[in-house]
Image 1 (cartoon, rainbow, N blue to C red):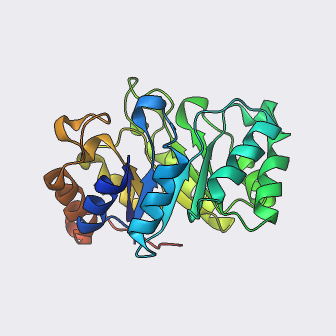
Image 2 (image 1 turned 30 degrees about the vertical axis):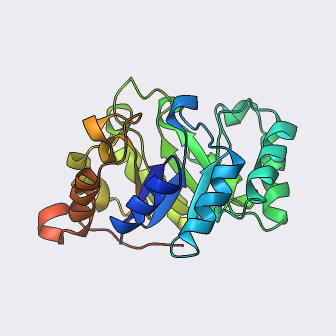
Length: 238
């Protein structure tokens, strides 16, 4: 079953997302970039508010591909007791040393989700490298939120290959990137563990807006729809 990752900016939105059926609460500050981080205080507040009712993930921010910087940011975020730490990786082929930072975090029991970007058309062999570095999961997102949805940058065949390869390696799989309700049916057929949303859950359909209960309900309904109405999901790894 494909589940719902809802990106929220704080405790109040986290509570609304849980009430609306989010399966993963994802902490992110849209005003600070594609993977902008909320403050450590907000991370701790949300973890306390959620109180184990569903996993909480948090981004470490838009960082340069410097291993020491990445390692330190992952450690700081993990200390706030989030379940998953998300790190964006651009041009990983040219910065293989960053894999050592991921391996160090994984060696200390931190569950790292690596975020790759559709605009980079990431090579599938990178998934094996991330698995070998101990990553818990991998997510495919878009770096430029003004350049269109995920499906504009990669077709369903390429997205399916990404999901299938990641799943075969035992990685948690996620797809995101300005997704709209109309994307859910086809993307569910690919069997990702979760689909991630921000703008589609907000007032006015913009990622900088406030979370909307009605928009969240619509996305939740589509994800819950039976196969003949909205595709089919295959599994969820937590």
